[in-house]
Image (tube, rainbow, N blue to C red; front, top):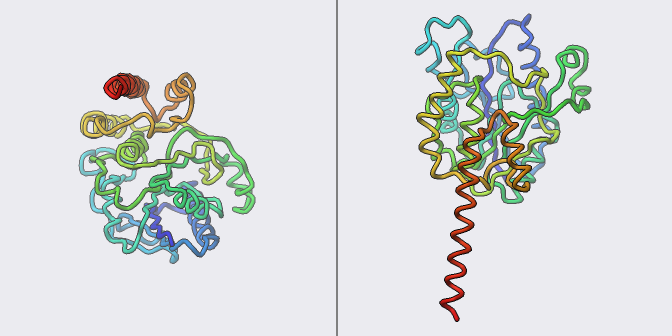
Length: 301
């Protein structure tokens, strides 16, 4: 039996907003996927939210305690809706009982019906962390098709990372800082933590397991919030994680050197300078291992 706690952070928006419909698709897809889950999966669905967002949650989800901190505290002049921090969302997992694996997805990430079964299979194969890239479905499709028809849409790939499954015990090691949800560098932060602390991570960069409404890859961003997250990652999070990183625990590790380099350079969620440092560290370690092996063989003669 694999016990999975799936947590999302819903937002209460007006029914006239596009996000309202897209979030309803997310809710329906998660509930439908939970019904498909095999008997070897014990699944519980959870939400955590600001107090004003409580009423949007379907009855199939258990509401954990409300979020308290938000971007309004450090950016009071920003008129957009307040955003939470990922560390506080993940803190809510402490209110969950009997979970072997934690699963976090954004509120705009819908699941295919067989999602949990596939995740369970990969966990059974020995992966202690799984990161899944979404497929992109057009807004026109979302406005004209039923959810069953949306399942059949192949969509297009997306380079970003927005679905994270990891062994519950890993969370106590995560370095999350004050990274804001819904802003670039949240995916970078979670990806680097998984690479640092998991033993056998799996990255599914082109699987038909989740989908998102909207074809954009790099949406318009608030500069203040973007630079906050960027500074938080590069100045506070990465320096702690860097000594623990190994290129073989990142996406594309299985590819030949030249293809791995191309993938890293093209992916907006990975950084070329980090790649060069990790690749160099890996090459140096291989040389050291070969030299040591040569020494041991001489000693054994």
